[in-house]
Length: 228
Image (cartoon, rainbow, N blue to C red; front, side, top):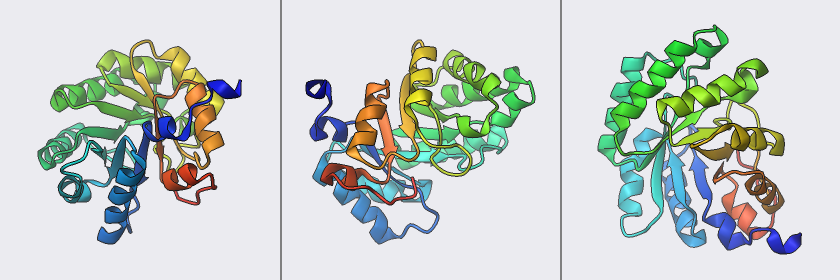
């Protein structure tokens, strides 16, 4: 029913406004922060080099500063990921989305996958970690194991995709799968969410958060053209 659909203010509170482009400029990130403030977004998602800048610009606001780690491939050594996580946390990131090594799962080595994730969760302490599962690049038979192993390792959120590369777009089917499979972890959806209709459908399917670069367009009722 139409009355059950979230209004734009409710959608905004679930949006993590994103610019993780390698070519993003300081002005681009300043605009990202200003748009998050204007629309009341949950947070901004940026590359690690911009965390300090965002913390300063958003110092008096409730908008969270979030960062992407081991991005965009996920194949860094576990000790390298832990070192990067340490640096990201020291910069002041309040949430961290990290790339999983899905090659471990695809190789049949679920133990290595889970061990790495658990190591990162332990290193993060109280800071919420969101795992980018890149389901679009992972054979379907490994999806359930990916979610269950991530949950067992203690992540705060399971996420369908980084929104870049082979991770694929957020769809109602994929978000429904994540919501039904995850028993404890929350769900973040990313990739191809461009309109208010997209956002409403994804939230209705069970997403708790939305990662998108099209937040302002969603708020304006237009179709966003961002990369994420």
